Image 1: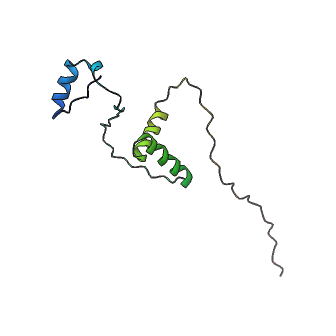
Image 2 (image 1 turned 90 degrees about the vertical axis):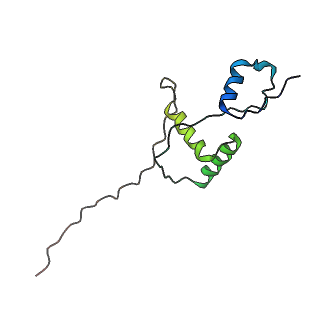
Image 3 (image 1 turned 180 degrees about the horizontal axis):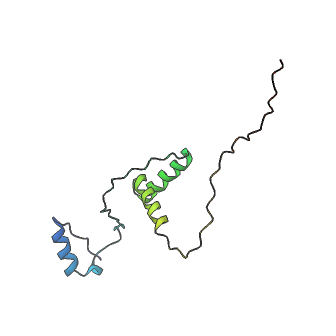
Length: 112
């Protein structure tokens, strides 16, 4: 039977344990992948999304166990750091409003 991991009072205690212990003796099935963000976040982005898209993002974030804004940030990072040689779907061009056609008018001289 595998042993449970002990609780540590400090990071130094945890580091010492990891350096000296044989982790194959311990039950690691309850461990979750963690991602730490060390860079400061000073810039803001404000965007409008369709409600259905935002609801889908929030549901996916909840399923992944992270706040939805962090989920969006991870998606953006993944898109930026995607390997360049991988084939991508062509982006859909945004719909543009058509400019109103300018129709020249004929000026007539005033009678008189």
